Amino acid sequence: MNIMVVGGGAREHAICDAIVRSKNVNLFSVMNNLNPGIKQMSEDFLQEKETNVEQVVNFAKEKNIEIVIVGPEAPLEAGLVNLLNENGIKACSPTKEAARIETDKEWMRNLLKKYNIPGQLRCETFTDSAKAKKYIEKQDCEVAIKPIGLTGGKGVKIYGDHFKNIDEAMEYVTEVIDNKIGGQSKVLVEEKAIGEEFTLQAFSDGNTILPLHAVQDHKRLLPGDSGPNTGGMGSYSCGNGLLPFLSKSEYEEGAGILQKIIEALNKEGCKYIGPIYGQFMITVDGPKIIEINARFGDPEAMNVLPLLETDFVEICTGMLDGTLSSKKIKIKNKSTVCKYVVPEGYGVKSMVGEKIVVDEDAIKNTGSELFYASVNKQNDFVHTTSSRSLAVVGIADDLANAENICEKALNYVKGDHIFIRHDIGTPELIEKRVTHMNKLRGM
Ligand code: AMP
Ligand code: GLY
Image 1 (cartoon, protein in one colour):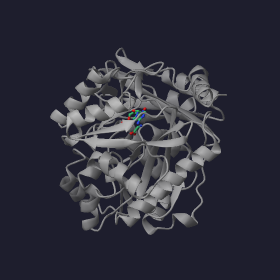
Image 2 (cartoon, helix red, strand yellow; image 1 turned 60 degrees about the vertical axis):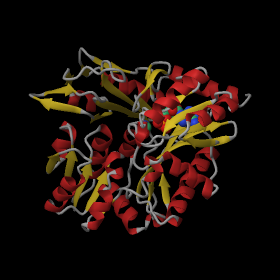
Image 3 (cartoon, protein in one colour; image 1 turned 90 degrees about the vertical axis):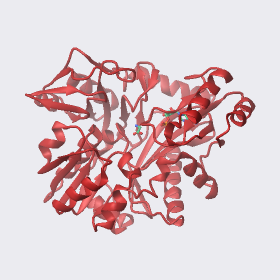
Image 4 (tube, rainbow, N blue to C red; image 1 turned 30 degrees about the vertical axis):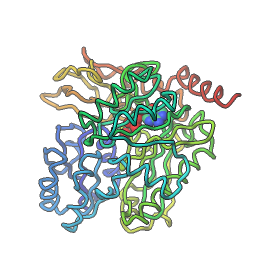
């Protein structure tokens, strides 16, 4: 079977890795940068901007592709899946209409309201900054300010983290409205949720979801959760599928919310096929929905895909045939710690074109996985671009060992201008999260 993956990041490298573990598949890929890991696994590839949907579809037709998996959100918004379907090619990713669950935050919040889905936050959208001001003042500034559309995970500003008073809040509100950040002269103001975050990813066939292990991502650039928001600096997961501060019932509430969203999308006439991603804040009132993504998370895909024992391509056909309810998904009960290597200056001004030396064999020998991201390879060396460079994932029976293995592997990644958040997955940071949650719960 010919399968094609769209996207050139570490998430897509992890998807490709899951595909080639299956038998009798030929992998093809489309990517903007030359990801050396994906290139090596692919029978053939097209180097092209992933949002140039006509070129991507032409390549798929030329290569007789049967199933396409789209990694990033931008090609979904550009209608790649719609055009593939029009050309008789199936995709384990949502159409442009179903992907609005991620690409239009106002639409997503309205859908939650319409179908009375649990885990909602108080929120409103504004095109008029004076009205936004009144609303924010009424909430004592305890809000999150968000553009409506896609901003690569970097458009959200939160009270206490990014602004401290109404004047600073209004500066951002005005910036979003005036500069149409996220594509519209409109801003979403949400209640600020307080607690600990977790990600829940699941496969969906449009009717049924099969959830994977919960993961915690680290959005902030610097150790101790400071600095600007990034696409994600690393993440961890535990062998039992939960997190040290997440109970089974909270996990199940999260999964229940994703199931209800799939059903609501169905009723709206946009059946959702593909991986779906829920980001939740566990608060004292239970899990609240922070965002829903129409794809795997990056880095969270790297925590869950290496643990799949069930054949990934079989899951893909289950998503397409609508037979997920008859499948049982097998996941290794291992813990994982993923840390990203990024160029120095990432999040502010990345150092581009810097050399990184990677000893792939030594990394494998530690028991870790290596996933390349936005790098280019020339003459045996990889070079940084402005985005994240590569991810290393330690896999072990428990979290402490997974973190240890990940750090061992990172010794085999060398560069004069790279940066890593070494605190991700360490016992100290995890203890801090547990203490935070216990304090909120009055324990
Ligand atoms: P997003 O781009 O929507 O993932 O938001 C980036 C980060 O901002 C999230 O990972 C959260 O940590 C934080 N965030 C977003 N919305 C809220 C909210 N309503 N309350 C508290 N934190 C939020
Ligand atoms: N890790 C956050 C995201 O993939 O959006």
